[in-house]
Length: 196
Image 1: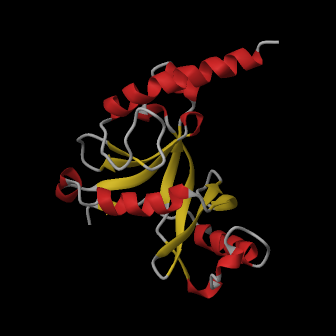
Image 2: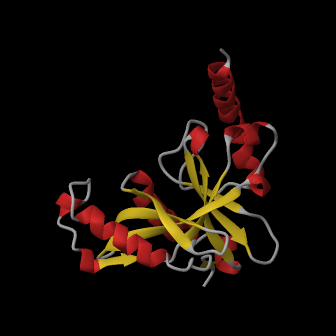
């Protein structure tokens, strides 16, 4: 298979299932949708990497992104209902479900993975699917990391900030050239807000 995923953290799927059961037994955005806990399936998790605005402004790119968690897509009968992110300890064991998300990036991730799998470089090679989160500029993108050299592929997920196009592959240089002005504005606002 051209796309593969990071190894699942120990205890990850168990924590997600326990958390999803709790979410479905109390009022939540998905508890009223007739979702059957026993019919839920979890995807293989993808690693989540984060990058801050100030790091982007100072020239940080993919090599500056930090692994912060692992994200599972949760589906019922092939329909995505949520994404659950777990945090791990130093040994790689999942210790906490950091968030369960029901927003637009859930379905966008599943769609993006299916679309990215058909890209020519992906069908010809082998890539690890990751998620790159640039919260300061409102961007989530699939990060396809090649196993044996070659260029990383970044695939923004809808909705995207102004200046980017969703569901289109970008090189690292293209993506960071587009988001650096957004990061500069965000960093300037943060700096201004911190001045007494």
